[in-house]
Amino acid sequence: MDAGQQPGPAGSRRRLAPWLAALAGGGVLCLIAVWLAGCNSGASRVTPLNSENRGGTVGDIVYTPPPLPTPPPARESPGRPEPGDVATERQPPRQPEPAPPVGPPLYTVNTSWLNVRLAAGTDATRIARLGEGTEVELLAEEALSSGESWARIRFPSDAGRNVGWVARSYLTLKDPAPVGTGADAPPDAGQPDFGDFADLHYAPVPKRSYDGNPRIDAKGIYLTLLTLRSERLATLVKLAKDTSVNAFVIDFKDDSGHLLTKSAAATRYNAKANDSLAFDDPAPLLKRLKDEGIYLIARIVTFKDPVFAKAHPSKAIWDRAAGRAFKSSDGLTWASPHDADFRSYNLGLAKEAAKLGFNEVQFDYIRFPDVPRSADLDYRNPNGDSKADAIQSFLLDARKALEPLKVYLAADVFGLVCHTIDDMRIGQYWEAVSNAVDYICPMMYPSHYGPMNYGFEVPDQKPYEVLDHGIRDSLKRNGNLETPARLRPWIQGFTATWVKGHITYGPDQVKAQIKALADNGVKSWLVWHPGNRYNPAAVK
Image 1: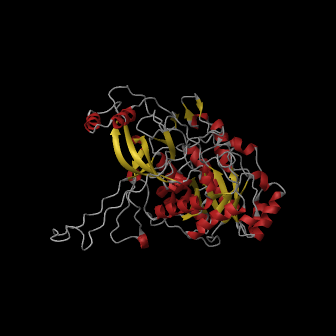
Image 2 (image 1 turned 60 degrees about the vertical axis):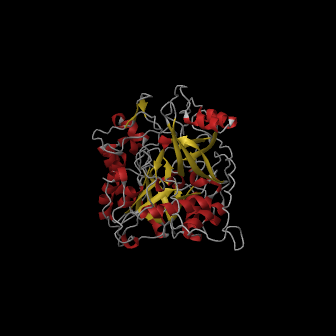
Image 3 (image 1 turned 135 degrees about the vertical axis):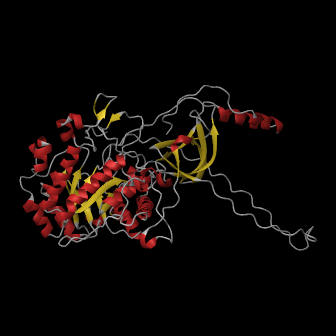
């Protein structure tokens, strides 16, 4: 992304040295090339997609031109003279072999989208777009006359590793390979470097297995409140009997703020939520599902809550530019994760779900909204707490609330959280979340990765490969903790028709994702389909 770039004055194109070098070599073409590379002006902005939008419209996907051809390999070095060749006698003593050169430093893209250009400057031709977290090699840096710094990088593509120019400010030095801890740690490995997030909680958090509620390798599907009340529920119960599915993820509070059943927490903190309920008493239904051997997970859409935000406008995240409560791309409003009453409301719902018989509580939208850097939002944060601290502290509070009830705790996170070295500006820092919960559920839908994430032009076309990359990154990040959460990714069960170049997701694509997890030792997964349409052949 070139966002944040400001047009600079035409000014001097470069220092004088390149011109002199071109003249000294008598190369007119070289001189022209230097002049062209120096031209720069203008700015462009790209609005990032909301990568959590599950099965809905996420905006236009900008077409990425095919990458430039990979340059031919370097010419081989000449071999040593053979006996009988000229100058084989009286050879000077052989010099020690030089040490192999150190490779270019690795960096990661730290913004949602980053344009790669043929030359330094926003007016140069765009040759690719890189998604957040993409690893690149930094080959050189150059300051323009405007004062802006640009970097020449080598970046991955399906056609090989290509070279181009990007705005330097959108690259972050990649941390060294994660250092394992516990049994897999090398001797004297020491404490991993958590950088800007070092003040969060990484001390061991025991992850227990509860009597009467043993841990299982959950293989689940998602059910809306509407499905739970429909005749289709019987079809899904039969699917669980006939396939490997053994868990249902059921909305306890959905995206619109609606509840499964009447809540005492709502009565205290959010009375309007009790006005529209799916069930007067869901206990008999939940017992019947558990009698069928189905593990029950209560999904609570946490900080995106239009019912609460409307009832408590002073607690809603405020969009200063629009002069109203912030709305995400789906038109729904958010309340502040910093607000004590809002946190207590969600924690109260979690305890009620546990007492109702759910085996596990899963917090979704356990984050701040995903917005451009230019967004001007008031998060109602009087104490100045960081986003990552707000999310982790809420999860640690939830753990304290649920442990006495012998119910497990899970959190959904963006798929790229396992790959980025920060919290993606939404408060989801991998190690901080993983240390707090029993299960961490990265949403690894291939359709929700941008062009060139993991080096794929259209990640939606690569169900096995995307999951393979993502789960390996997740395992590495978990290696930084003594007590990490168990991995249970969300996988794609829908066709992302809005993605340019998308493919149809049928049984083969779902099975490819499950195989990628299994090949890396992860046997637990959750399939998302917004309409709850699941093909038994995909989950046999």
